[in-house]
Amino acid sequence: MHRSAPRLSRILACAAVPVMLVAVGCSSDSGSDGKKNAGSSSSGTASAKPSEPTVEPAKFTDLPDPCTSIGKKTIEDLVPEAKKKGGTPGGSSDLSVRGSCSWNGLDDQGVKGSQYRWMDVGFTRFDSDQSLGSGAERATEDYAKQVAKTKASEGAEKVAAEPAAGIGDQATLVTYGLSKTDEDFVYATVVARTGNVVVTLTYNGAGYAGAKTPSSADIVKGAQKAAEEAIAKVEEFGGSEDSSPAKGGSGETEKDTKKDRADAKGDAEGGDSPKSKATPKS
Picture 1: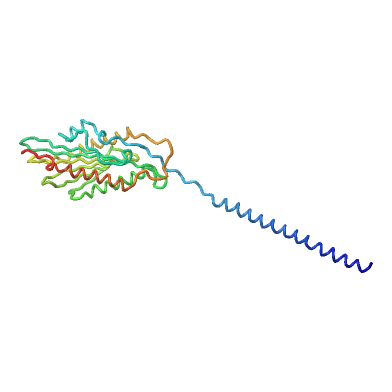
Picture 2 (picture 1 turned 90 degrees about the vertical axis):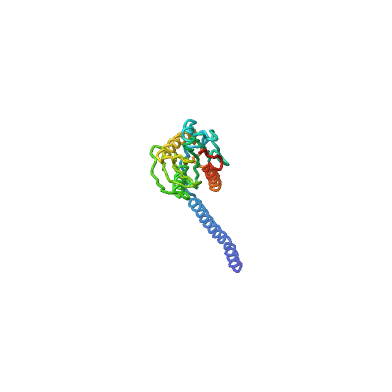
């Protein structure tokens, strides 16, 4: 009887040990899970980023036909005897983004010689883009590039540039002289911006077969008048966005833009040489 009591005590003590271990284990796991859950919650909060501000919507969503952007009466006055009164459109992959049109004509004045005139108008529209900026910002950058490009025209002499007031949101008049086909040409280019659209208008002329070279004042006056009409047409026709403020990707590529401008320049170079298309009478 006395010997069995100590044995019973040892059995009860051994049985109690697993129970304590289980309790400790449960307590430890619970603490670990709590830390994991807290860490997960903290990580989720830290990874949240504030939304990016949207860019300003583009003002104009379309472009008018460049060949109808200048009035018929103005064309008749500035380009007498134009070969195509409706103009010659330039190549474009998307007329809602860019387009151009040119006119040229040789006015035969008999014994007084002949007067040659050439005019070109080009439009480029920029959409608002979340990664590239608003249409107006992108157009402002292109406007500055076009002014610099015009001032650096190959062979240009006596280049001068000044602001052209009252044309769009901003405009610059660039004038210069250029000698080719054995004649002196007088040039005037107006680069203007309205909203997210850049308008570039070039007007030039020369006298053939003894005719006087046109005055710079007349060429400038004609260029400014035509540019005002082109800008007014854009503002009348373009419309404004009322849907999403910006696109995720650019709707135009720099490669296409350069190609279209190169095509327009090629038309201009061809149009400036009336000797290749018509022989002035002396």
